[in-house]
Image (cartoon, rainbow, N blue to C red):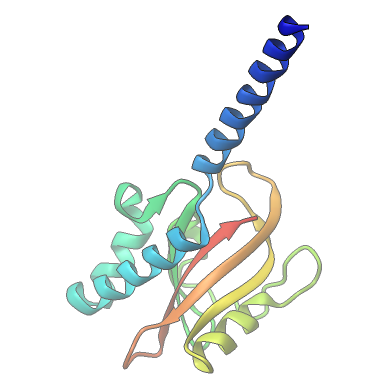
Length: 154
């Protein structure tokens, strides 16, 4: 009987370690908010153009686990994107997720209205390459027609 308990204890410990390892691969809501706050501060200190380039190209500084920074203006134009540079320069206002939700409109509305908050939608995870549920934290850049976004995969 002791060997069964030992095996079960080892199994549960292994499951716990696996869950911890998986959690460490995914950004948290706190990680996303902290990265968004840092991105807004970077825009204030380095200027918009330099920041946009940094967010898009400097993966070491602006991509953490499976989260990254993106920046849009309030018209839906992508200014920077840490996971897909091809989106930069495009207007994404009519972009829909796999369920048909025009989530960019919700991101813009959140930034233009409340100024910051969370928006839920479905998006391709750059790590898994699969469409997954996502929540993005958006934060308006004070005094600018811009907002920063950082999303987590749920």
